[in-house]
Image (cartoon, rainbow, N blue to C red; front, side):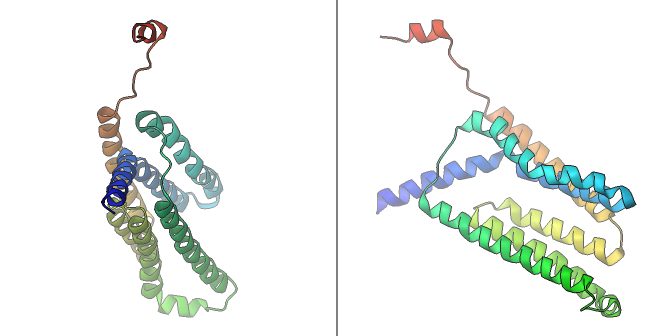
Length: 207
């Protein structure tokens, strides 16, 4: 039992080290900034959606190019993979609920008059759902910073809906992006890429 607990703690520390790069915050901040641009682009917002769709693959590529060379590739245990599956269920449920609400609204099941009358409820509901998704992610991924990031992003979307302006997305995106950038710079300085020994150095190291 003590050995099992120690292995869990080692795995937890390894996982936490992978979250020190700040890349998630950088890309979330960039997404908010792109959402702001989409909000002010009018009919040209389609050109903003393209880089937004590429942010996920770009994050995975950045992890491979920045984080993995410094910390190596780690295969985590069954318990952490189970957490990931639970997280996917929660996020999928939240996305489905959001899509259903959007479909109901667009089909006129909720009249425009009702939406206007309950504008505050809709605005806080949107922000609350976003914050809830981030809270679930933070819990199942052992990622405490996401609690605060989720509150910032949820508040930004609530204020955007309440006051019908994308400016809160700009402010929140700038804050999250800059914080992530500072964390990333510290990570790169703290974990330099290990030097690869050349043929001469390897030959000297032979017995």
